[in-house]
Length: 79
Image (tube, rainbow, N blue to C red; front, side, top):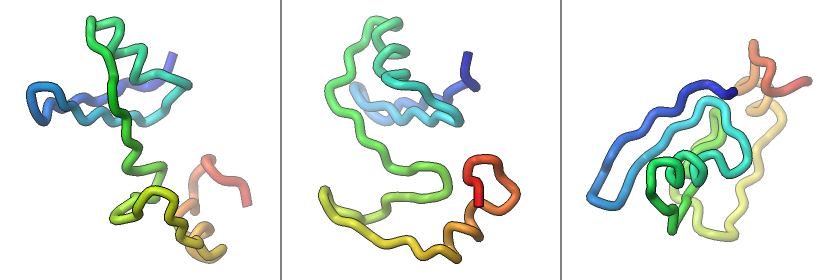
């Protein structure tokens, strides 16, 4: 089992689903169980990092001191 997900309907066929903890294909499985099919899936944030205005294929370097600051007091990242 995983932690609960939050779902918000944005448009007729568009939802925002927020996972605190996710497993492979979890969103697709949740939607299929409710009779829906996922046609587009876009990750907009991973942990404390938001994709912001990054374009497909674009890369931004994250400095070590930023990583340490973002993951202080968490078990998500081992220094």
